[in-house]
Amino acid sequence: MTAAFESARRIADGAFWLGGCLSAFGHGEEVHYHVNAFLVIGDERAVLIDTGDPAHREMVLAQVEEVLAGRTLDYVVPTHPEIPHAGNLPALMQRYPQAVVVGEIRDYHLHFPEFADRLLALPPGRSIDLGGRELMLMPAHIRDLENTTWAWDSGAGVLFVSDGFSFIHDVPSPDEEEDEPVHRPGQCRLLSGEMPEPPTVAQAAYGTGRALYWTKFVDVSDAFTAIESLLDEHPTRFIGPAHGNVIDDVDGMLRTSLAAHRTVYQGRGLGL
Ligand SMILES: [Zn+2]
Ligand SMILES: [Zn+2]
Image 1: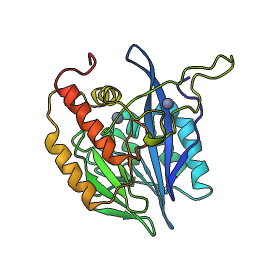
Image 2: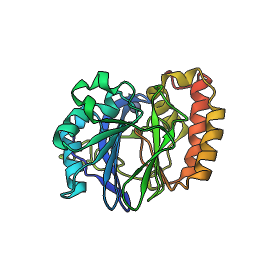
Image 3: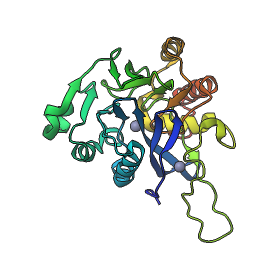
C-alpha cells in the first residue's frame, strides 16, 4: 500500500513532481504523507531536488528515468541529509555515474563516504546553470537541520522548501466496488488548488508538527516575514514541499501554513 506506483507529474515546462506517499495516522484515521522529490530539466542539464524515501526507491528510479527520457542526471540537491530526503542518494549515484551532489554538503562525506569525491559545496545564493534556467540555492527559513537548503527554479518559478509548508491529505475512501486499490491516484498528485478542498490548518499543523518537532517551541513569525521578501524577489508560481501536495495557491498557503505554525506553537497541535 505504501509503494503503489505513482507516475511523475509535470508541474510546468521542465519541472516535475516525483516520489510517493506513505500511510500515516492523523485525525484518528489513515491519511497520506508525501515524500516528494522534484526534477528540473534545463536545455543542457538536469537536477533532482531531494531523493524520495527508500521505501519508494524503485519507483523514484523509474520516475527519474521516464522523465529524463534518455538524458542523464547531472546534479542531485538533497535539501538535508535525512533519510526521506537523501536516502536514495546511493542508488541514484550508482545509476547515474556522472551525477554530482551539490549544495550544503558539509557532513555528507560522513553519511556517504563512498561518494565523497562527488560532492560539490555550493552556498545559498549561488546557482546551478541548467541551460536556459537556473536552480538557485536558497537559505531555508523553516528548517530542521542546520544545513537544510531551499532552492528556486528560475524557469518555472518553483520554490522547493524541504520540510517547510508540510501538510497531509486524506486517503480517498474506497468506492463500493471491490478491487479499487486504497492508494488510487486520488489526491496524491493534485495541486493544492485542484483538491476538493484546500488544505486545512489542521492538516498543515499535523504535517508541520510531524516534520518539524521544534515548531512546538518556536514562534515563526519572523521566518514568515523573511519568506515573504524571498517571494517578492523571486517570482514563485508554485511551492514544492517535500511532504505535501504541490502548492499553486501560494498566497493562500502562506496564510494556512502560518496559522498551522501558530496552532502547533500554541500547543493545540492535535495532540502532537
Ligand atoms: Zn522531511
Ligand atoms: Zn497520497
